[in-house]
Image 1 (tube, one colour):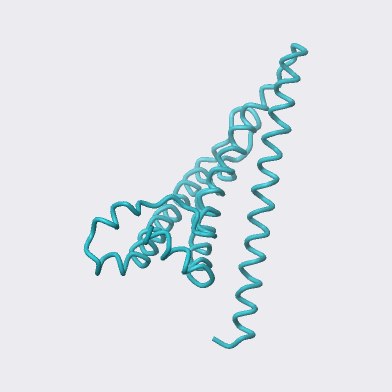
Image 2 (cartoon, rainbow, N blue to C red):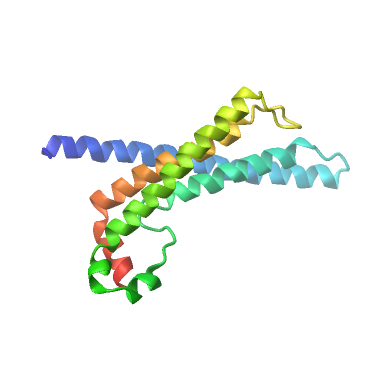
Length: 169
């Protein structure tokens, strides 16, 4: 790859990382503010029913974002103990086993996430209190899958030593 192409690719990953970090931060702040609002409302005897639903939806988004973001710096949970018990030739290919299994998981998540969203759009499903279109919540699955795949590629390109070290431990 030409040096300029590598620079563009690195900038692309930086932009994706900045976007996902910003969305995750805003989601976490939303949870904090809404829960404080919920507590305050209960203390004064005027609870707001929308706070529980918004907290739940923001939490779902945050969890799915975390799944995809965890693959950025090889911080995702993996079963390395099992790999140590396998023959050496399998251990040597473990990076590719990890990569293919992880991408396979995200492709599965992408396909079924899009299917879920399609169902939510076709049925015009809305949340009970906020009346939000539920496909907005369902969007977290395919978004997480795409983020996860991009972060696996990023970790292979820039942090491959971390992946191999995790398997060796």
